[in-house]
Amino acid sequence: MDKASEFMEAYTNPFKFWDYVKILDPDRKAIIPFEQWEHLRKLIEVFLKYRLIVILKSKQVGVSWSLAKYALHETYKTGANILEMSKGENEAIDLLSKSRFIYSQLPRWLQLEKEHDGMTLLSFKAPKSRIVALSSTSSSGVGQTGSLVIIDEADFQDNLEMSYSTLKATVDAGGQMIIASTRDITRANSFFIDLYMGAKRGGNGFFPMFFPYYVRPGRTEEWHKEKEKEYPIREFFLANYPRTEEEALSSLSQRGLFDSKLLQGLLEGCKAPVETRYGTTRIYQRPKVGTEYMAGADIAEGRGGDYSVLWIEGREGLQRELVAIIRTNLLTIDLFSYQSLELLREYFNPLVLCGNDAFGLNFLDNLLKLSYVNIYYEDRVRGKPGYSDIKTNRDKNFLELDKALRAGLIIRDKEALVDFVNFQITEGGRFEAARNANDDCVCAAAKATAGWQLKKAPHRITVSYY
Image 1 (cartoon, rainbow, N blue to C red):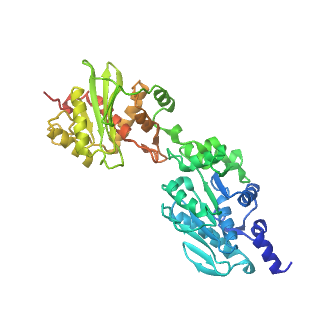
Image 2: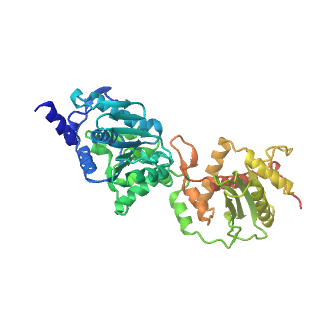
Image 3: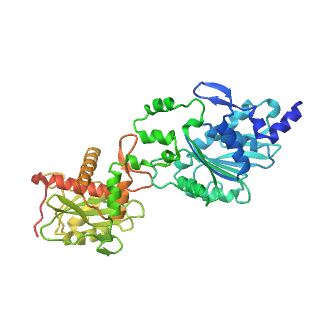
């Protein structure tokens, strides 16, 4: 067969084109032929059959190189405009560089004449085609028409929903969109997983594909067990090398600090508050004489971001219960202080523990100006209002809060319980909210828990007289 015939065959047949593809293997530190594993051949068949595709995958099963190969082959079509996005601009550039590397290893007679070769753009003269690496922003791709859009590592993108909306519009005239990712299990609410599950249900037009760890030849159960030893937290390992869709789709709820079954029971026992005020304050149990009360506060700026929370617990004997809560991200600290004062007075002026960061001190200063003095001070001479929310204190208080839940702390507020469900132990051993979730209720509850502990040390408590 002459070169012209070979070129035409490779140009029209992506499987024939594959015969000439070489990739860089970082493990072997060598350039090797791109092996035509069975699952990757099925992947290309799906690319040729469906316009909208979403892929949930294990790590290192050849999908990214397949996307790069497919994108490069699409540039042989006249006017092809291929848009690539990954979890960050550097990762998108890396995906484009894979196509560039494949191009560099093709036989000279199969290489198109380049027009531009830059970090974020690879274009060719004769077909007037190009591959563009986009940053992960909501405006990326605006005003373009994409013949092919590739979003790789989609679950790790902070702006995925907005980026998707923009890029989906570029292919609505008939272009193709391929979205692929491993699972980011730190996300409480994942647009990528919603998209994948919608495809499984057949309701969004996408064709779903799942690749477990073992689709790559050589990966045995013994390999899986040995690989797991490299991961201190099992859930991160299962997200990267899942055996089943269930493992791939799971979030860190199994790695939550607080017992998930216990929280599920509390969620099932949630009830409507006996009273709601101002849209921010929820009362679950009215004040009772003879009940001890404690308050914890976690304060934010109040401009639509993090929430400010005042958490008031009651205790009778050993039984603790959340009796009232204020939770809002719309009130300024001044207005939040006024609402808090009203609630604190109603519950017999309980001790208030609040962090001594800038927002917390602003809140405490407002309470003091309003003549509320039953607040926790860091020193005996009452020169340092507030509680030092350093990591040591925070971690101790979160663990004590976990003990309190196991001992029967009652919480009937659904929004608060959602915060508890999404409060995780990260791979680095930190206690914090899952991505896209909030921890404000947990932090306020932890300070109330610290208050009960400090009751055992009377010299650290300031008692008010009215």
